Length: 291
Image (cartoon, rainbow, N blue to C red; front, side, top):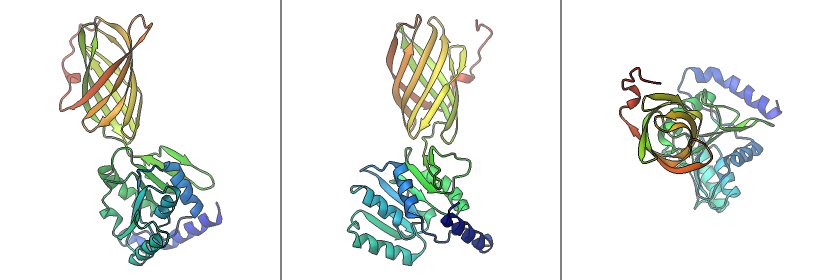
């Protein structure tokens, strides 16, 4: 562990007793500038980004982002009014006040709906308590970057461990629940009823078509992008290989289905549109004729 890490851990240990009996509060410890740049590089900043720092301190994360990309916008919030004033003064001095602002505000009261990148370096418990706020407000695809601390059982999508851990999470679309769609095969349409279970970006699923059921395989969810495969025998069609990929738009998924039919000598590219439903045909009686 480097000297900065040792100093930080010592400071946190000394502050623990005082923090135990009051509302959770993160003491101001400025992020190491090298780690700030590593965090922002992990986020792969874009021209249209809105970078938000929850607990912005001296403003260095948003200010550094504005220097690294001269088109993005950003803002930060902090409960220390003096630091907020100093951060805004720095933004003016650097000529970026038209793109960067800081507000005297509690991190829990920040409106995150326009954010595309959210930075945090707060007390570990604070970051964990902010997790449901972020998941409720931030749009799918929003990148979350932190220095050293994690987000509990939500595992990062990417991380850089040397010389000190920085990590990035991508807010996943909400796909848990019932979904249905149809695909055309030889003049008829086959209906699929799917149930997806979700824990952050980890998704599992099962599907029914006719009286047959199967598992979804290789399910990947990254922001609003979803993909999975399905190997299934369909009545009057035979064994079919499916590969689905699309974008989640609220209660609709729009994309394509790559389908390989017997004798599997070619692949069809079909439009795919799945819709979220209140009930599922997956639970309908099956009967014993399942040969």
